[in-house]
Image (cartoon, rainbow, N blue to C red):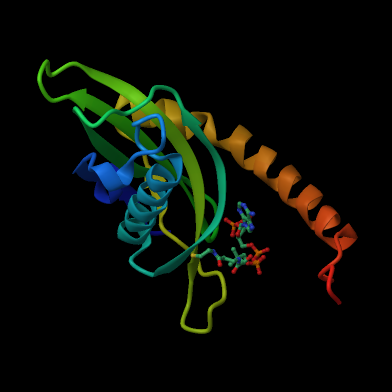
Length: 170
Ligand SMILES: CC(C)(COP(=O)(O)OP(=O)(O)OC[C@H]1O[C@@H](n2cnc3c(N)ncnc32)[C@H](O)[C@@H]1OP(=O)(O)O)[C@@H](O)C(=O)NCCC(=O)NCCS
């Protein structure tokens, strides 16, 4: 079984906060940050497996602190755990006050990506090897998150069976 270090998937993206990026509180719009998160997480997953990937799910996005126009926002993403064809990606969002250099964790997110082969079928990915303390902690706790996702997916499928697809004007 092929193996890759967590570090081989690690990537960063730093951005300014422009007037078009903010909400009516003059802080970074949550939807904009979620798009940044999905974007960088898909790059980390692709770097790990070097195959086409799709987002299977986003467990959570926890917005811990508001990000203001005087801050920069830096996202760090890496693969923390792998199944057969799925990869868990962790995204850490750090805001930095550009005048004082003060940094804080502004948000965190876990997402799952699935590698696809040329026929768009789930395809095996290399196992991931954690090295740093942070990577090891995220790797060790991933099995519990994977089990929670498996249960949630079952519930989502049952829920989808119950929902209608008709529109009110039909
Ligand atoms: C994700 C997808 C490829 C899974 O396909 P599937 O036929 O259900 O495949 P399987 O049931 O064999 O599952 C394949 C893997 O995906 C994982 N998976 C599937 N759905 C998942 C979910 N909602 N959350 C987390 N993992 C999921 C399974 O656990 C399995 O992992 P493993 O191989 O590591 O054990 C399919 O549901 C899909 O194409 N979804 C739409 C993706 C999309 O459009 N994303 C947005 C744009 S990129």
